[in-house]
Length: 251
Image (tube, rainbow, N blue to C red; front, top):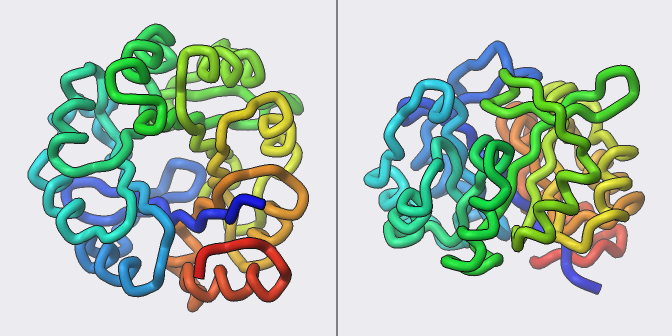
């Protein structure tokens, strides 16, 4: 059985780590570089770094920051935020990131995913999907949860798979920052319809939430942020907790 990956998701704005609730009420929670150094010690499997305001504010990708983080990061690094061209991806990978996370541009142009996967390899292309549950149906949003789309989640996931995406970062906006557990039902459905590795995000507040996630779904990785910012639980603590319950993790 493949080992479950433990992946902190770091959200930032203007060099500072931020965290919100349901993609709103953002507040500063620390320093990017300090967090990276701590996660190096705490044996995380990968790190995801996302500029949450880049697309909406038309911000230029800070390649110096990517380089600084990549040089300090001893685990695979995924960078996202503001990516809109193949040249953006090339520069980010050249600067030191291992993967890129794409959201809004993939929604606008699925062919972009196809071109990116062919040029850089599927293993480099992570597609971020943010959604809310409305009238019992998952509704996909772009631009950091600001723009509602008409995409069907199941169809979009299959389209991404066919276009050559390598992985999906699936985030439930309703549960983001709430720390009351993952949207197991939707995650389970997505895992069943797609062969792509799924990183589940949104809602983890305690170790048992992660355990329930990996027991009831086929996710490849446990994504979390608030739990690490606002509780005593570390990624290494979570690995030990899961390992004690016979969940395969890297320790």
